[in-house]
Amino acid sequence: MQTFLKTLLAAVIAAGSLMHTAAAAEGDDYPRRAVRLISPNAPGSANDTLLRLLTVKLGDMLGQSVYIENQAGAAA
Image 1 (cartoon, rainbow, N blue to C red):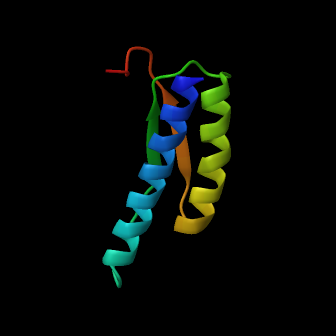
Image 2: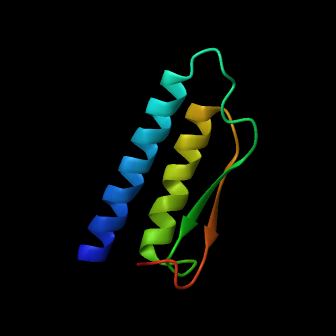
């Protein structure tokens, strides 16, 4: 459960920082290409599923494709 909460918090912070960056760069058409999020979790896990749901909303907000790349060992 703690891992789930940590992942949720990280996703919220990442989304917030992307929104802040996009707002700070008014007039700039950031991002110009698809946004890649790296997940240390296995595909199909609860954390991965939640992150995929968040990427749909994030993609709508940014007006750009957002995709997840699952990489084993990406956790610190």
